[in-house]
Amino acid sequence: MTSTRQTAVMDTAPTSLIASSKEKYRLCQARLNRGWLELALLSIHGSLEDGLRSYLLLRHLPAPQGEWDALLRQIQTHGELAEADQSTARLYQIDHLHRCITRGEAVTIAAETMQEYQRVAAEVLNRHGVLVVVPEERSTIAADTSQVPSWMSGEQRMRHSTRILVAALVLVAALVLGAVAISRMPATANLPDILLAGVSPTRSNTPLPDTASTASRPTAVPARALAPGRTAYVVEDLDGQAMLGLQMQPGDTSIEQTRVRVAPGTAVLVVAGPVEIDGQAWWQVRVFNQEGWSPAEALEIR
Image 1 (spheres, rainbow, N blue to C red):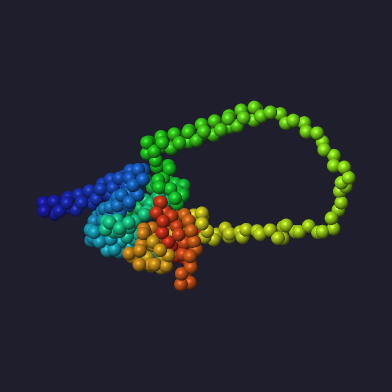
Image 2: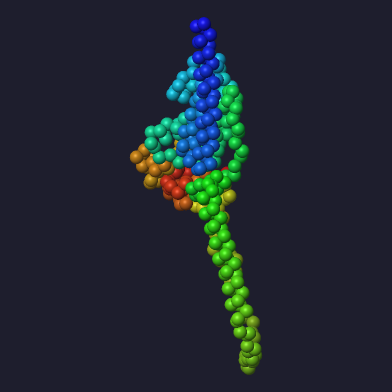
């Protein structure tokens, strides 16, 4: 009787964790639809923790709770996740962002970064017995937008449609008024031809200057070079750092001067620069309407 009761308890815990993992994954999707990216990351972290713990408990293995590193080591040893797997690096990034958010730090997560984390989480969960829907690929979001257009709420879509309609009406009105103004213009009077007597055309022997060679030509910017107005991406390898800190001033790398921290792969808009300090180039970038300075080697053009 005792062994039967213990078996029932062992079976109930993993089942509850699987249900909790699926529920948190659905909550993540709902928060993504509303553009609540930080809250969505908290949900996806909880979904992963519950799902991976259920996998270990079903095999009667230790399942650490609240210890992400220990949990991933157990999964790498007994589960379907290799240490060199790209998904493993993403899981550590998710945990780092989770700890930053729970500590109240200023963190900016790009929509495309969160899409990648959700896709990785879905693949990892499906490999470990928690069946969830893998999200479809979405288009890249511009770096200076504050919301994901395809995820707008009904009210936001209505406002967006209204703006487009108003702009179209203004354009049509401008075209109509222009056509009316042209139709009311008086016909051009026939001006008499004026003949200048005693003046004959002469050829000048002075050579004309070569305007093509003397005119200053703008220097073309290489296609894959950083420049103001271009969209750049945070590099994946940040020399051991999980996130890139955008600084208030170029050259100052102190934590106190960090304005916001962004994850690898995040799209940013280059707005100014470069500024060279101590032999290092710095660029001012904008992400989700927040601006800060980044070293050049932390950015790339794709």
